[in-house]
Length: 149
Image 1: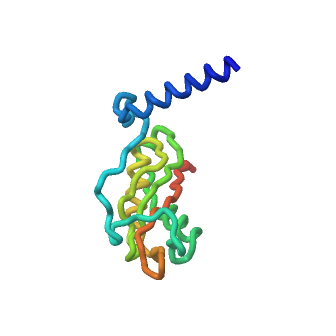
Image 2: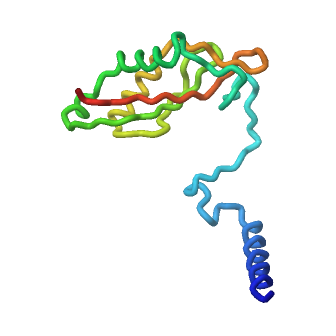
Image 3: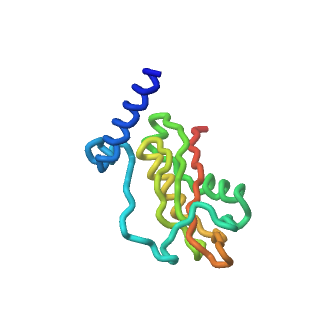
């Protein structure tokens, strides 16, 4: 019974302390914790993670990966250093089917990251995602592999 009461007391104290802090004293930004602001995106600006009909590349996923493979220009510095790797790029398929806001989701070296972003930004031919029968902006990810032959 004593252990239970002690545990309950510790839980109460920790709960009270946690409620009294706004997160900044614990380094919230360093922990990757961000707080929502009053800035609300309009329907035109909103970017969805999942929608009723996800965006697709004309020709399918295989055609998308072939496009990337055919348009990669292996960075010379990476070639000379024998660097290989995989970069995962996150980007928005806009409601008009174009690519926007490309960013590194999982990176490699700066040279490989930069080339992956360049190739993804050059992609055309997406069929946009749809929500409630309307085209919308949707996050999409794609792997870009660099392998020396």
